[in-house]
Image 1 (cartoon, rainbow, N blue to C red):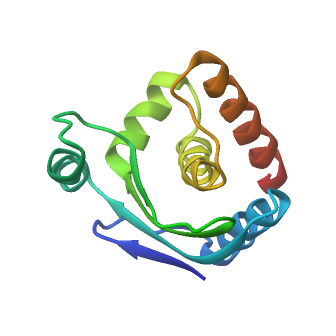
Image 2: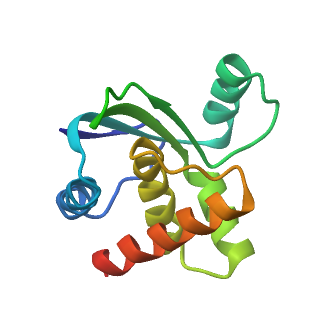
Image 3: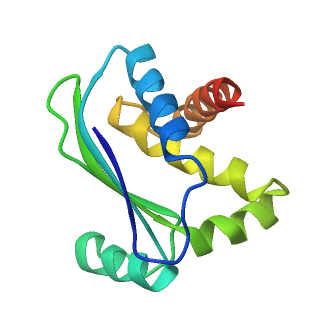
Length: 136
């Protein structure tokens, strides 16, 4: 089950389409879903979580809390819509493309992909690009 929650005025255009895409991605990665809760919020909301739970006094676009067990995915993904808008401008892409990248980025973490090293980040980006093409 995928749930979309909004702590800001932003709303996804097509929750059903995005849900199907996420479920297909999880299946393609040989995982199952228990539940993912997406929370779309602003910078202030996400900054508070970043300080409180991760001791990071910085702005970020996404924080994910992973409660997965084995190949069964469960977690909460918080996304700052403000940060995604700014990053889209910085990266020269549309808001929707950057938002979808962040949405699938969290799922890929749950599937076991990391992005702390240069090589891991390269693999993560390749997977993001693969699944972004499937949404188009």
